[in-house]
Image (cartoon, rainbow, N blue to C red):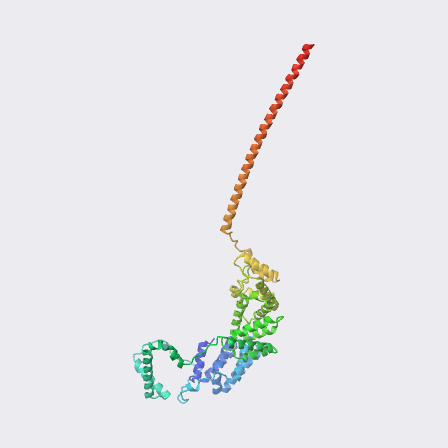
Length: 480
């Protein structure tokens, strides 16, 4: 693949008529011979830079190159984004290559007769002269510089007196500026009065007007193609492209139901310029971080909007790295957003293709928050979440990991507290058992003493009754 720096060097050489235009046509023919997305993009950028010069030097050759672009567009074997870039190139050509008009007239100082054009081809044998890349000290540096200055004055038509006066005036001005540097500190306000002062508008009036224009253009267009054409003609200033992305998301959230009009319009801008895909990634992060502020209807529309961009690969799936699906880091609003997002992706791609996307090893680091495997607790929460929304097929890998996940040891504080509680319970149980045993022994001893005393009293009373009966018998026998 041709290096972009070499391409840049080539079209600069073509601008200055340093190389022949046939070299540029040969390079474009090679790039478009077997078209790929990368080669076609390089060819498009090259034609944008050199198109005006080639139109002047070889209009027939440039026409053949554009016919090849048209053939590639009709074949349809390249990505949609590259096809949009080719359409933009045709529109750029129709506008006369505005902004790429070659060398300005004030810099075109060398006559055509004095120019040396190198007629080389891609297949020619070149003498690279690698020794020129090595720095060598020039013993005659001052002499060579003087000769170069004479050649420069001869080419530019300058006289030695003018150059000498210019150098003298330059040295005088430098000396004056250096001598008055100490005095300029006190007169800074006065010296600024002679210069042009730029006033910065901090009221953001231009930004408000831009948002109003974007909103009216979006709402007044018949379809997304008309809206995209109008917005592209607005010439949004550099750095304000994020306002377009923000307005698309806000307009989509204000609708009663989700309209594919906004998704297709955002998809078109992402395919035309990769910058918009990066900006939508930032907007996704901002929307997810403030998702708790949205109502349920707005939340649903925003989730379906980003699901459409992800399903069509208009924006990168790396934006899912902002999501952390755990019980502590999610709220009810964020869980609803994730639910609608993945349900829409499953409906658009199918569960099998969505699962293949989520199991892609190259994207594994960006999906660790959605499908965590750091702790079994978080993994179970993610599995239960996807199963509850009808996407349990995405959790097979997490279930396999959960089976072999190492069990974490209980925390030290809990174990110590449990051991202390068990020791206290054991001590209390032992004390209770000892008290119960002592009470039992005392009760048994008291009952034993009571039984022995009662038996003694019974025996003494029986012996008394016996002795009384004997005395009565004796008295009766004496009376007889």
